Length: 634
Image (cartoon, rainbow, N blue to C red; front, side):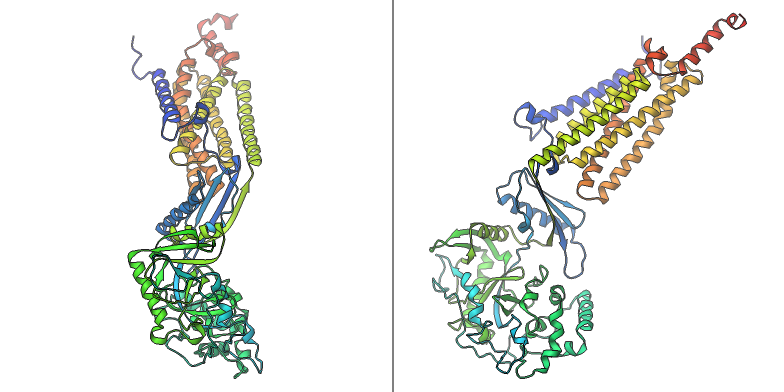
């Protein structure tokens, strides 16, 4: 006999729930990424705070306007950083973006130093146009002092090229021409006699001809007010490094520039950075990353205590096709560079220009010991080397230096996978040991178990038979959540953290609220005179609105928290939202159908067994009085 029209068929809802379980756990055991034994396939993806490992947070910075990077640049940076991390031979590394500025790198089960993976690695090849003292010694006027670098001075090209001895660009075996096989590390100028007369390579005191962003102009105005109008005018009027020996009064005028921070020095015009002796390499070396990123402008950088005025970058890191760390003939680690087709043309043109000193662009202070121009290999703000070009290089080249296996491979990896389009600053690196992670996991599971146990004890104590509905609902919700965690960990990389476990514990309270709403509404219906069987569907209709509203509010809160938060809070919000959605599934497909089935049993009519309390005795007394009016008369 078919049930009356409109009567619920609980078997259908339970069948749908069973189908959901079957599909979910088929994905758990047999979906892509499932491997190993049965126990291995049941393991969710755990976070660093549960199994140990390393987490590094990188924050994108912008030295010009402070605006966050575009989404495309941030995603490109994420991919490059992921390639760099994978190049370390690290398995299961996770690199994700958070918010509009942060990239988070996670290495589960491993403790490593990851701070160098966020380096910009902006490679530039620039001719050295001029050299001057950068130690600050020239800022101290003395009768014998001279702004002209001398071979014996610490700021001489010979001394400064000492770092060049550690790194030189030499042609590979297939190259033609180039430097001597063992280039002079000093690359010194023969008794340079630098004059203060401006040359074709003299930097303009103002910025380049390109329009400068308004924000930089504002920063320069603030610096002008800080150092004073007299100092700013004196610095702007310099066409060459100031000679304090001939004009000692300049020392006092230019002294305020020595108090500027590296961030303030970074926005100064190139001419002021180079010509003002009170601006030292100590300030220039600490400029923010990407301070000399623009390849179309001249730049100032330091090497071994000397300031170099560098030409526009004629060859970029993007012109490098491949980079590898190899051992040279002297068993020293070098980075071998293979250029692209157009990159090789640019490199050949640059070495020809430097070898011939076309246009006499290189000042005497910048020439090597054989009278040839030097080319600085600039990585970010630092000069890796500045070798003298001893021939036109038509083949691949090498960057040699004081490298070991690790540093050479790191540099090669940075160049091979490209420069980051965004500048990053490491904000936080957290190392969690495996022992500590295991204790966190046990503590989280213990807290979840205690929370569920307390809810179950209260349910059986207060609702008795109905407590079994609560118990079964929580067990089914837990199984759904666990299966979802395993599948989501494989498909989208969701990682369960200690904060996520906290979110699931909070969801227990949300689930308990829905039970209370439904059962108390059921009692109200019985008190109003309805039979238990008829009260169940009516109580469901009325309680359903409240349950959906309460869960919807919790879900919206989790979504908002997930959108605006980062880090562990994001995991808390995701776990809370997931558990809330799955609780609603259990409410509709299990709790209400099973209550309909219970309402048809005799035990449901017993106040002591059902847990409906005093609602059923009151109803039973009313029914007895209506059926036997003589009882009242007696």
